Amino acid sequence: MLTLSTIHAIINVDESCGLGAAMIKLNSGATWLVCCDSQVSLRQSGTSQLVSSDPVVGAVRLALVNEACSQALPALLQAKDTIPVGGTVSVESDDDSATFAIQWHTQGGPADQLLMCALPHHQSSLVDAQWVEEIGKYWTSMGQVRGVRGSRWQLVEAVEALGFSGRTKLSEADRSVLRELVLADVSALPNDVNVLPPDP
Picture 1 (spheres, rainbow, N blue to C red):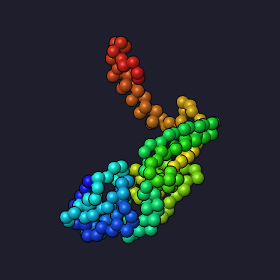
Picture 2: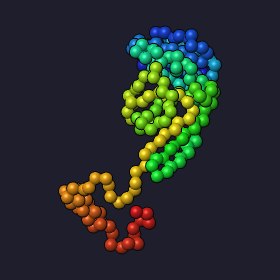
Picture 3: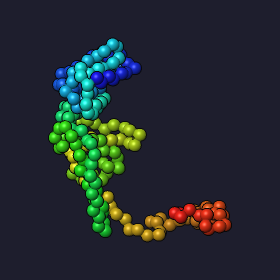
Picture 4: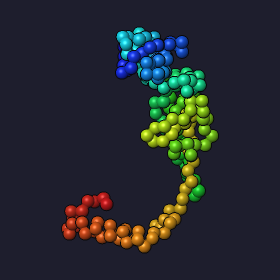
């Protein structure tokens, strides 16, 4: 059996989303959508536990769905049965750009219903993304994420010419600091080159 516990009291369990899914309202004001791969019933046990009627096999996903983002519920429910389980990456490049294609592997529901979150560095490169604006944007430790639907991501990045010089020239002050750092590294090397690591 699945048991989920919270430090807050559960004040309502709404299973109207269908088997394996429930909206859980807490006394903190938060509302969570809980979705299980297994078609189980979810019920409250005690003050702060949610338990399943049967063992849960597969994924369990949680989404915070407060009143401010209640418009996200239909999109979340549409995607609830499609679980990402891996992916294949392919890369192509030419002189001007590199294209990265990620084919997400899924299980459960239709692959085209996969709902994932794109990080900022994905968002600026994704081509023909099917953005799911109704789920909003959320802040994470890696920046603001956006929902994107679909099992294939194509990202295009500009390729810059490679060389030993950067686009910006070093100032004389930066050159002096760099010179001091290199000299410090050299003076820290052992006198016997045989004790140097084989890989710099």
